Image (cartoon, rainbow, N blue to C red; front, top):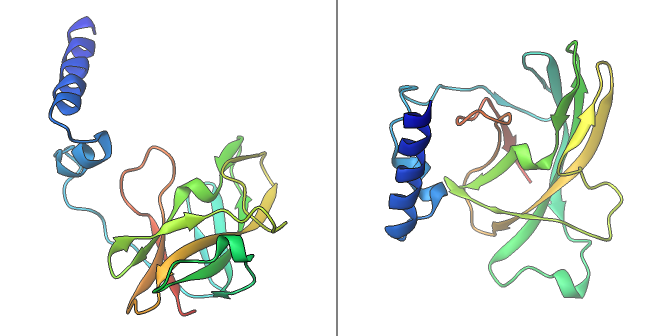
Length: 168
């Protein structure tokens, strides 16, 4: 165990000294999981059933109700996606907006937290068995993006488990 800890620390030191961020490092490491698994892409109104939870894709739309202080820069716009998450398992689980990532033409888009909206999905919320959480996630995407998709990856999983098509 001590040897493993030393190896991990040495790897992190090499990453830090090489000027590469840990996130960039993770992209290039062969973790032994093989090729990323294919995943289904869900449309508005459809539900993804995971291991002990469900995610219902309620809606997705262009969002223009922002304040002048939060206006996206030229060439970008905001979208708002609404999800309902239910813990159908037997133990407490954490869910939230941190588990979702939007991709515009394959490039990760910035998540936008709107302090003026009461419908924001929490970054992380504890759900007991049978409990639900509903909320919106906002993203800043290029106006000219051809393909928009929101991916979901549960905590601790390196690959996307489900995708949600964006037609906003």
